[in-house]
Structure formats: structure tokens, C-alpha cells
Amino acid sequence: MSIRIGISPIAWQNDDLPDLTAAYTMEQALREAREIGYTGVERGRRMPQDTEGLRAYLEANDIALCGGWCSGNLMVNPVSDEIAAIRPQVAQFVALGSPCLVYAECSNTVPGNRNVPVNARPKLDRDAVTAYGAKLSEMAKWMAGEGMVLAYHHHMGSMIEDQDDVDWLMEGSSPEVTLLFDTGHLQFGGASVMGTLDKWGHRVRHVHFKDVREGVTRRIRAEGGSFLDAVVAGAFTVPGDPEGSIDFQAVTDALKRTGYKGWIVVEAEQDPAKAPPYEYSKMGYDHIVALCARAGLAVESRSPSHA
Image 1: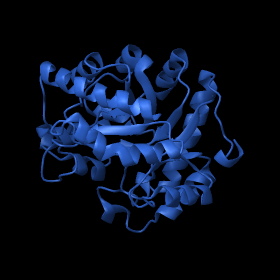
Image 2: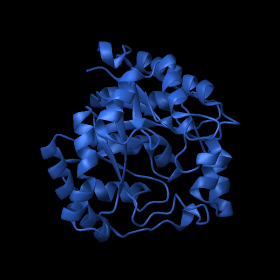
Image 3: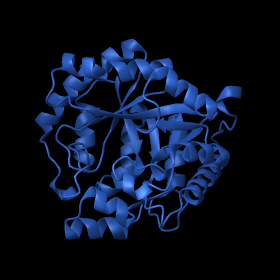
Image 4: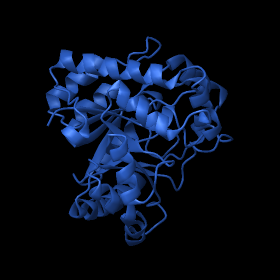
């Protein structure tokens, strides 16, 4: 299997800040993403939610489902209740051939609240993360039995954000719990992008290429801004933007060394008035194609219907 390049529609349709992208539609997002060359898209809230409706919607736009967010509540729910809660999404993703389900704990997070500083996120000790990892392992094993991969999303403003959090979760969970490797959240969270990939590359099953404007993230930290404040201020951008700070060639070379074969997904929420979605999404796509060529990674460029 070659590398495939997908995109989150968040640049055109921001679920957390819908007013920011009110001038854009999901149909435009998929049409333009496909025109640029992306062959997959992660599920957005403004897509059809029923399985057959979503299948028809994706097929009409000649694009595959390459993952999607799942808001988890495993910290407060018994495993059996959480399985019951996510079962419909797991079944849908299996039916539509998604490579994974992107799971993130949301029962105690702050990124969706613009009134809460990102610095005020919950911080657990190692024992608490390990206990959570044990519950997550049970759920991931069930999910694997259903034919779906659980890819855990470390995320700004959540209890799994910095290097210790990621390491403790991986150490405290079974191999069925795989890692969504998100460069931007690692960088913003103060973790080591390359160190995480070197240590946990064998557990990586999904990749988000997101760059960071470090001047913005430092200011947000210093001024007590929220995660959404950071988004509006331009904390994130696409790979290839000269204002970014991550060495994506080093990351891509490391993915090649680990034998990664899956999706690289561009996810870079920004103010479209400052970063036009088509222009920046094309910048990201073109840059990833060049990165993969230099790393010796083949990119699948055919549409899903002809793959």
C-alpha cells in the first residue's frame, strides 16, 4: 500500500468555530480538496450522519473516508457503556472502509471552551493515565474485533497533551491502542515531534501533518489564551508554509524508516480570511508530495473509485 494524502475539511468548515467559516460549504470543501489532489477526507459534522447517506455523499465527490473524530467519555463511563455509545460510529466506519477511528477523551477537556485558558487543561499523574490506558485497551480490543483500529488523538487542552502523557498512555495500554501522530499538537504541547515518532513509530497508525507558528503559541501560553483563541490567532498552518516551525522532511523520512503505510492527513484550522482554504490546502498537498518523493515514499494519486 502506498501513502495516501487526505485532508480534514476543517479549513473550510470549522466545527468548533462555525462562524469563522460561514462563507464556505462542505460541498465546496470536498470539491476543492479533490481538485487539489486529495483522495480522502475525514468525517465532518456537516456531512450526512447516516451510513448510506454518507457513502453516497463521498462517492458523489469521488473521495474516500480516511478517518474521523470520536468524542470519548471513557474517563467517566464504564467500558461497556462507552462501547455502546461508540458502536454506531464504529459500525459506520467499518462499512465505509475507514482506516481508523480517531478517539479523543472529551469528558474533562477544555479546548472547546473559549473562556478557559489552554494552560488550564487537566493534568493527570502516571497512575491515573495508566488506569485510563487499561480501560482504553479493553475498548480497543473490542474495536479490533469489529474490524476497526482505535487511533488515540493526543490533543491540546486535554489530559493527553505533553510528552509524559503520551509516553504514559502508550506504556500503559495494549498494542491495540494505536497512536494518531499529530505533529502540530505535539509541538504546541511541548512534546518532541521526532522523539515521539522514534519511540512510538511502531504504534502509529494514522498521521496528521499540522504545522505551528511558534510565536503565536508562545503568546497564547503567556497571555492565558484558550485553544480557540490560538486557532483564530493563527497558531496552526499547513506543511510548506514558511511561517511554520516543524521539519516535515525529517518526519517523512522517519515515517519511511518505520515502514508506515497509510494516510497522511492535512489538518490545519485557520481563519480563512487570513489563510484562504484552497490556497493553503494546495500548499500543504504539494509540499507533502515533494516530501514523499524525497523520502522515497510512493503516493497513491488515483481517485478511490479507480484505485
